[in-house]
Length: 86
Image (cartoon, rainbow, N blue to C red; front, side):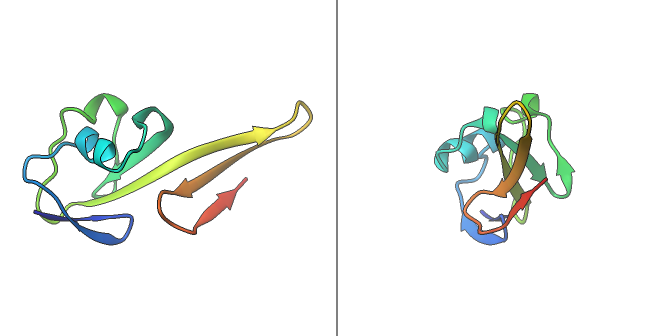
Protein backbone atom coordinates (compact mmCIF):
# COMPACT_ATOMS: atom_id res chain seq x y z
CA UNK A 1 0.00 0.00 0.00
CA UNK A 2 1.13 3.58 -0.61
CA UNK A 3 0.54 6.52 1.72
CA UNK A 4 1.97 10.01 2.06
CA UNK A 5 3.96 10.85 5.21
CA UNK A 6 4.86 14.53 5.69
CA UNK A 7 4.54 15.07 1.96
CA UNK A 8 6.63 12.06 0.90
CA UNK A 9 5.27 8.88 -0.70
CA UNK A 10 5.97 5.66 1.23
CA UNK A 11 5.22 2.03 0.49
CA UNK A 12 4.03 0.10 3.55
CA UNK A 13 2.60 -3.30 4.41
CA UNK A 14 -1.20 -3.46 4.27
CA UNK A 15 -2.95 -3.31 7.63
CA UNK A 16 -0.26 -1.25 9.38
CA UNK A 17 -1.59 0.94 12.20
CA UNK A 18 -0.52 4.48 13.02
CA UNK A 19 1.38 3.03 16.01
CA UNK A 20 3.09 0.55 13.69
CA UNK A 21 4.11 3.36 11.33
CA UNK A 22 5.60 5.35 14.21
CA UNK A 23 7.54 2.25 15.31
CA UNK A 24 8.84 1.71 11.75
CA UNK A 25 9.97 5.33 11.66
CA UNK A 26 11.57 5.04 15.14
CA UNK A 27 9.34 7.82 16.51
CA UNK A 28 8.12 7.85 20.10
CA UNK A 29 4.32 8.23 20.10
CA UNK A 30 4.33 10.20 23.35
CA UNK A 31 6.34 13.00 21.70
CA UNK A 32 4.27 13.61 18.56
CA UNK A 33 0.88 14.62 17.25
CA UNK A 34 -0.45 12.78 14.21
CA UNK A 35 -2.82 14.16 11.62
CA UNK A 36 -4.52 11.57 9.41
CA UNK A 37 -6.34 12.92 6.36
CA UNK A 38 -6.65 16.40 7.95
CA UNK A 39 -7.93 15.04 11.30
CA UNK A 40 -5.73 15.12 14.41
CA UNK A 41 -5.78 11.75 16.13
CA UNK A 42 -5.97 11.15 19.85
CA UNK A 43 -2.98 9.07 21.01
CA UNK A 44 -5.43 6.40 22.20
CA UNK A 45 -6.33 5.80 18.54
CA UNK A 46 -2.76 5.11 17.33
CA UNK A 47 -3.01 1.35 18.05
CA UNK A 48 -6.54 1.01 16.66
CA UNK A 49 -6.29 3.17 13.54
CA UNK A 50 -5.29 1.12 10.47
CA UNK A 51 -3.79 2.96 7.54
CA UNK A 52 -5.40 2.69 4.10
CA UNK A 53 -4.16 3.13 0.55
CA UNK A 54 -3.77 6.85 -0.23
CA UNK A 55 -3.88 8.09 3.39
CA UNK A 56 -2.08 11.33 4.12
CA UNK A 57 -0.20 11.51 7.43
CA UNK A 58 1.50 14.50 9.04
CA UNK A 59 3.70 13.76 12.06
CA UNK A 60 4.54 16.74 14.24
CA UNK A 61 6.97 16.62 17.16
CA UNK A 62 6.93 19.02 20.07
CA UNK A 63 10.14 20.58 21.35
CA UNK A 64 10.13 22.70 24.52
CA UNK A 65 12.77 24.91 25.98
CA UNK A 66 13.47 28.19 27.74
CA UNK A 67 14.05 29.42 31.26
CA UNK A 68 11.87 30.51 34.19
CA UNK A 69 11.56 33.96 32.61
CA UNK A 70 10.96 32.75 29.09
CA UNK A 71 9.62 29.56 27.57
CA UNK A 72 9.29 28.47 23.98
CA UNK A 73 7.46 25.70 22.24
CA UNK A 74 8.49 24.67 18.76
CA UNK A 75 6.64 22.50 16.30
CA UNK A 76 8.78 20.56 13.90
CA UNK A 77 7.68 18.20 11.13
CA UNK A 78 9.63 14.95 11.35
CA UNK A 79 12.11 14.59 8.48
CA UNK A 80 11.43 18.18 7.38
CA UNK A 81 13.22 21.49 7.53
CA UNK A 82 10.06 23.32 8.57
CA UNK A 83 10.38 24.79 12.06
CA UNK A 84 7.91 27.22 13.59
CA UNK A 85 8.58 28.78 16.98
CA UNK A 86 6.20 30.70 19.21
